[in-house]
Amino acid sequence: MLWFIVLYGIIAMGLSAYLYLRCHSKAEYILGGRKMNSPTVGFTAQTAISGYFFTVCIPLKVLDPSAGIWGAVFAAAGMVCGIFLSRFAVSRRLRIYSEIAGNSLSFPEYVENRFKDKTGILRAVCAAVILIFDIIFAASIITVSADILDEFTSIGRVSAMIVCGLIIAIFVFLGGFPAIAATSHIKSLIMLLFFVFIIISGINADIFNPQGTTEDGFFVHAARTVNETGFTNGIVEHILSFISYAILFFGLPMINTVYMSAKERRTPKRRIAYEFAWAIPSAVGAVLCGIIAKTVASGSVETPQDYVKALSQGTVPIIGSMIMSLIFIVCLSTAESAVFSAGTALSYDLFAHSPKKQTTQKESLFLTRLSTVVATVAAVLYAISGPISSFFSFDFIIMLISASFGPTVLFGLFSNRLTARGSCISTGFGIISACVFNYFLPIYGLHVIIGTIPSFLITTAVLFAVSLIDKKSISKKMENEFGRTKEIAVMK
Image (cartoon, rainbow, N blue to C red):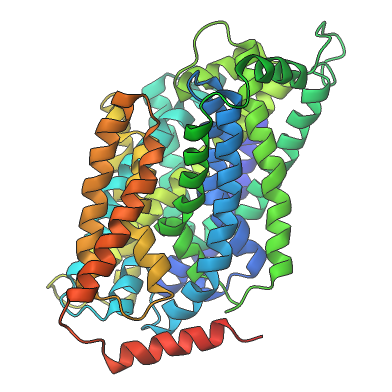
């Protein structure tokens, strides 16, 4: 299926080059000029990060003996709930508030404007967290993409990483956020079609391979495994995993930035229902991907690299190729979103507001583009330097970012009594608590992602406690912006 990846690459690069010619300001490059329609916003938010969850993280849970199929089912269900809890609770108000509060273009700028922080500390802290951890996040995903590319071409792992980095850098440099959003419909359609093929193969494993000898579909293998493990085994941990994934999406800057880009201030519920129709088969297909890998794997499967090799070497050829192509495209998409987020945090939220001479709009736009290339290079170098540390695992990065920003985003949209000091200090507590739980949970045999719950609760408690004792009064302007946001959000 190398031809399919090449075809997608040509289309994606063509779109980014076209959008490069139409982009003339930072507002258009960073947020698409707030011109994204509702379906584009929904699918961009899902493919930006949920695609990687569905194609890699959920299948790995099936392959993890401590989670198994039931663990993957609960996690997938939690993701689906999290996507739509975020969509209903956050997207509408965040879109309105980000415009009312100084027409914010980035997530750190929104937080600064929301809490009227004139010191710049809150914005710098948010930008630094995004810059550091999104680069590490992108590096972990680039390694998976490189393994897939190496399987297709045998060019070597390091060379594959460089090629992946080059593709990401060119795509994001040229097109920025509009290019990421423009390709979201293509990626969501690819994911849906491939997952439908996978679900069909669950009924009959030989449906795409008439010469095969397999009598049973992969659903039969799934049923046998479910009977062997039982529903109640590890049920408490499964429920905690469900809750963790359900609250995970509130604080992810990549998703929140997408919400801020919407053209419509209020999204009709029927349009969100269309996104729901995409997420359900994706979640089912994700679990089935893990079942296929578990069925055909000749040895232990513990890492994304092992999972990729199992799919490429043991499945029905056309199914394996489809899944491999899908994972490669989705991984690149997630890495593109991560380096874009890191790059804009560097140029727009850190560099642009440091003491320096004034730049023209053209120079400023070029520096913003260049910063995404710097972020990509940093991610590739980190990936090449060696295996990603277990302490900086994908689950840990997501948990830390969500626990740090989630309460500020969610409760900042529904309470006008929160302060900049409370948000800043609570973000620090979110980072510390995430590191603590990342260290201790594996010792007790628990998955790192479960640390999202206590970290989220600690961050929330600190946010309200500090805001309560903060003697700084809430400004009239802040109250007016909050009231206006609430008024528009509840309008029919």
